[in-house]
Image 1 (cartoon, rainbow, N blue to C red):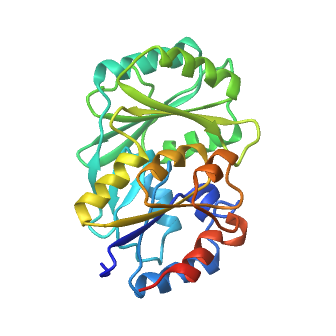
Image 2: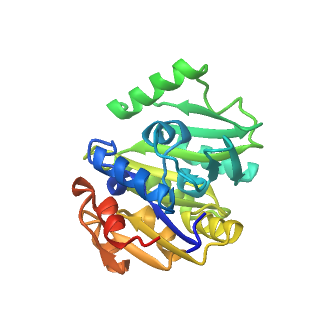
Length: 277
């Protein structure tokens, strides 16, 4: 790591990625060049490991990455999860019951023996979106799909529910009466009529994950880039906060700087203009 001990960390969707959910050639080349010059770089995203690893192919990311909004931290070089937060089994039951009460489609994630497993339940009351159907088909090719009922609840780390804002708000409000976990509800930027409700342990947040990286690797300054509601916790752990031009009003108001939009390679351009070895 460079002598500066500064970490640059970016959200992915809507921030580092273009609206096509891909990194531009300009961003890839910029990150690779800057890392070679000493840039300490990582990402903090709600995404799972495999899509992030594919997106970052060819970029020698030199700091462990934050996944699933901070539920897990993965070292790409050592190829292992170095930190994760489990949800209390009693809380898992509460979350499952709330999703079934309002019949929303959900994905549950288990990290066991270093392997991430995915399970889902789908209800006919709300026809699943194309996004949900593609995700279910993807998991069928990886492992047999299962509902939530027969799974041990000792190693559950995360839930993602995908539906309309109105339907997910019912689950959100039901869970708001409970304790022992965090949840975030926000729009799917790739679908106008789809929202995400993500539920995880009370120890899980991008803020806590960034603070973990600061302490473990001795960074004395952290500069973060974001665009959406779930990036606000990450901003709390950063010394300097940069919002992309397409960020929500709330994120822009929390930022120290506003760079160009994700479609205009805002993060990469800001790094090229401001990174000093």
